Image (cartoon, rainbow, N blue to C red):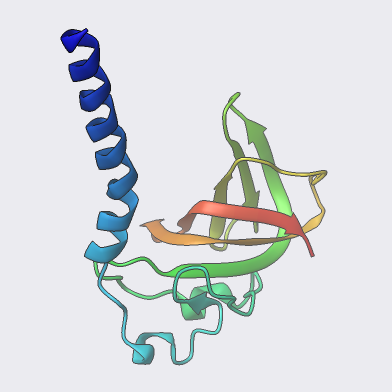
Length: 142
């Protein structure tokens, strides 16, 4: 009986520590100063609405960098150029070459189809000069 009690106590401690991880990660993030968002209406603090950029206007708003321990969200509206599913997540991309391409990593693409105008909103991550990834991200029709 003691062994079962020890296991349930260990399991309870493990569950509690796993539950605290998101809170610890959120607490560890540094708030980005409001000045960062000036002239960047497509960008916002996490979980706050930004005004979606267009495929044509997004390049002018992209920051050179974001503090590594911060999350900044971005919103963009444009034609869907890619929809793929790997069995777990969906990948939805908007905007075409030669401009900035934005990829949304999401758990559902709804009824989006290639060519639909979609709004992507999510955690900003610059991959390179021409590619942005939003993860986590929500994709919806405009």
